[in-house]
Length: 177
Ligand SMILES: Cc1cc2nc3c(=O)[nH]c(=O)nc-3n(C[C@H](O)[C@H](O)[C@H](O)COP(=O)(O)O)c2cc1C
Image 1 (tube, rainbow, N blue to C red):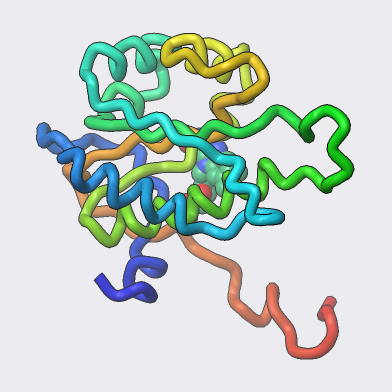
Image 2: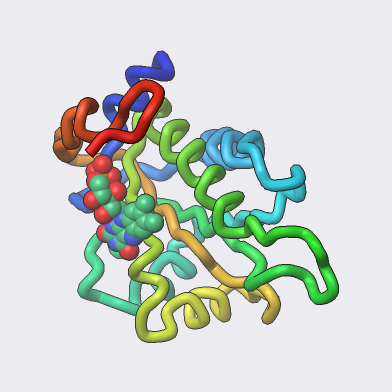
């Protein structure tokens, strides 16, 4: 799929998934797209855990049975980031931005390959879920599960959610009102 088509088609998908596994070859292509993302100082702080074992997927879904997309996911990519700057480091901390850049690259790759997903981040920040998920796949104490991307082949068509018009959000040469 052409890049601008993938950008246009990407949307958060929380609906049912087809009963079809996501081949590891595709999962690795998606994560490679995340690895290609820029990062502050090229420090490449984001690491990735790819979950395709149904038992592990079920364990994660059991953390919050109300979050239906977790129960639907045929695979899941967890983006893991440092909790903060390394002790003694004088560099600015870009762990969150590094992770966000990787996530958007992966969402576009997911769309281009015909899968659907949603950026789960707020969900992780509540009720100690980031720690609960991290324990399931042994994330070290000094790192945090920042984003989860549940994915699969969507069982229904959905449109992109609306955007404000460009002239309300972008201007040439000075910030508008
Ligand atoms: C930083 C961030 C955190 C998000 N956290 C969640 C989340 O926890 N759960 C969820 O269902 N969607 C989450 N989303 C998805 C947004 O709700 C979604 O991107 C937004 O409503 C726009 O819709 P679209 O992605 O279909 O364009 C998050 C998106 C971002 C960028």
